[in-house]
Length: 487
Image 1 (spheres, rainbow, N blue to C red):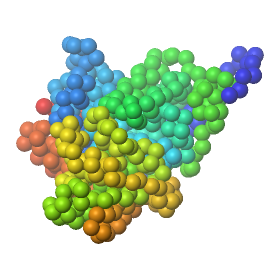
Image 2 (cartoon, rainbow, N blue to C red):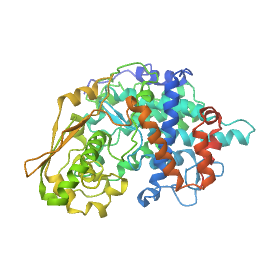
Image 3 (cartoon, rainbow, N blue to C red):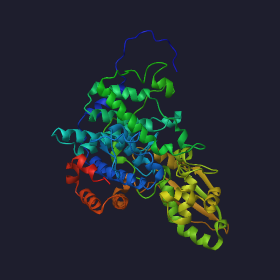
Image 4 (cartoon, rainbow, N blue to C red):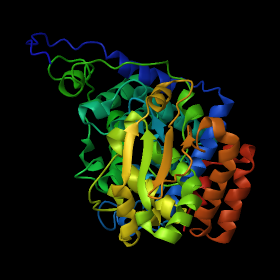
């Protein structure tokens, strides 16, 4: 950190990373057909996650206006509810719904995160603006326009994550949700280049939330609403910028007081590639299991091994198991390698050993498997105690390879009678770009099952028909689309 006195009050030009973000969000060109196709699936997957979250009272209690009765006629809708809220509070609601179960899309690099978290801000602002436009006899933006904004938000969050490890300085990845949503929401609201830079400068001055709530011994449910909170803050920054608040051009680079010196060990940001549509094209979907993504392939391995383990346990009980050997990537060791008592749902869905033990025992891993009722089964902790986790250097190398972005794990179970299961290895999960043809039908079943229990049959059928027609899907006004998720 620099402590040299700053004598000049001359305001410098805006920091380059802030101008680059502003220029990117104002550039209308996103020409990738693959990005738009992936974005359609991303939108449906995120709304499936929101539907599934409505089964959890801890999520539902976060929904609605900030204070009772503070709804807004003509405001933004909150899916699967009757709420109409101002766009900032709606962003919090939608972001919390999408993120609650840790089941939405993922981006893994130097930093980790979930780019579809940004839909909290994007859908709230789009629906709000659509109602305002229609009240004046103007058209609302289309779903395709919303997908374009989502591609840009994914790219900003994921582009920063490629080389910049905020986790290494103790900051949570939702700092990048706030950044991306701030830039995109300001542009959606009609902000010009200067206003976008202003809003982004405020986002950086906010610094970041600590990762405390994601790690033992403090793991807790704030991790499920942290992204919603970032979306809400982003919309507030955007609205303030449109009002003409003053920006801070060297929010990053100011000696002593800027983000780099205060929060990033004095290092400037690094970038692997210019902004385009790389992140949306390569984003990872959580399709089969609501599990922290570094464990997805480990769960696939455990599911394959379940029949072997079940037959042994049927004869000798859990004591038949001598040890369970997991090999994983370095990132998983840092995030989800966890021993000792697990206090709550959030503790369990960020414990690699737990997420392997459950499918080994039951041949499944669902959101309910993180509840106290399932966790009370003593066999789970017995298997956890017999589990070793080590880094496989190949998995780590391929994790960072920009042409692979693998998330490899292997699992093998050894028994006291001297036998063992095969050593099952999965390099990349069903939600990976290389498995799109296999994964997208499964994703659509996830969407269909999720909305079936939350929406009237006619609405659910309309949505499924719409999803099968990209042209009609893209052309639909966002207000009409969001109305299909009303309860």
